[in-house]
Length: 108
Image (cartoon, rainbow, N blue to C red; front, side, top):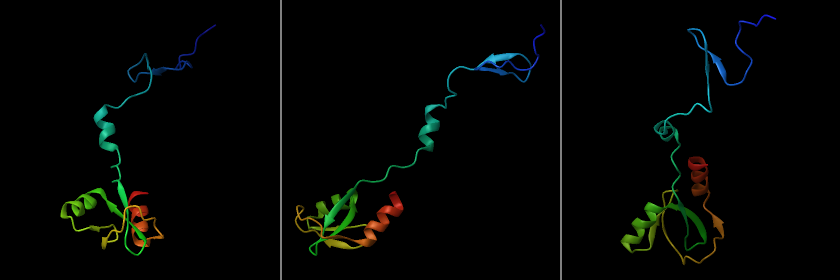
């Protein structure tokens, strides 16, 4: 019985362009620097701040630390307002639509 001259039907064997066959083992892996360059940036951690009206706003950790260093009790939030924060234990009555929309659009 004569064997076919076409590529073997075995898994893991590929034809070389110059003739002959080479075994391909495992996954074709990219170097680690390739994966790091392609990763999406991680979203910042957002802090929920409730103002004196009971409206919850979102602020970044950097804005929270800046307000903490000032010691004034005012913090910049995503919607661009500078809010005076009520007690950190106050539950929110409603969420700021602008902050919530910006959070979803930027980091969804």
